[in-house]
Amino acid sequence: MKNLVRHIQNYVHLTDSDIKRLYEETQVISIKKKEFLLQEGGICQSDYFVSQGCLRMYFIKENGTEQITQFAIENWWMSDYMSLMTQKASPFYLQTIENAKIIRLNASSAERLFEDVPVLERYFRLVRQHAYAASQFRIKFLYDYSREELYRHFSSHFPEFVQRVPQYMLASYLGFTPEYLSEIRKKT
Image 1 (cartoon, one colour):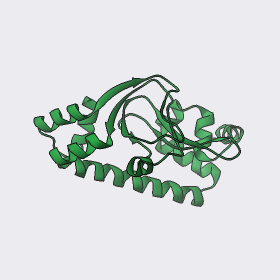
Image 2 (cartoon, one colour):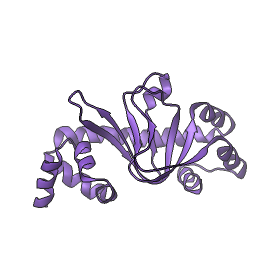
Image 3 (tube, helix red, strand yellow):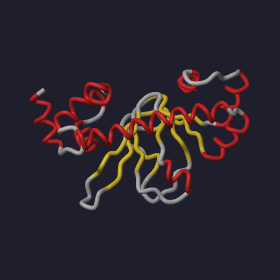
């Protein structure tokens, strides 16, 4: 929980009573490598903060291959926000890549927190604005960069992922085959 409190306090100030309410409304869960937080067809009930470990979000394409859309490491949030918001079935899987300690905030707890600790609404707005801006740039890079440029940009800006994520998962995220990613890595 200390990681989450520190992360929040990078954006907003929390009082001791705010922190106490945060502790009351969240759950710390330990999850083993390759376990699921959400599977396709399930309804997402929570937002997940990575205290330790690494997660991925993916869907299964028509040809049966996995397409990774997102990774999350320490101090990152992950959820299927559309499913969480609409309470409709998710097309995504959320899965651990490593053993993980996750802080779970379910939707009803979040609403109570926002009422009791209004500064947390500001925190979540700021965090989600940053995440949305990052996703906009990712889309731009997918259209704008060559495949080699895309890999070089990702590996220079997010070296922690290149070191921690298996190559086949990194290839999926970048839209490459593992073989093509190997060729690019040999060149660099």
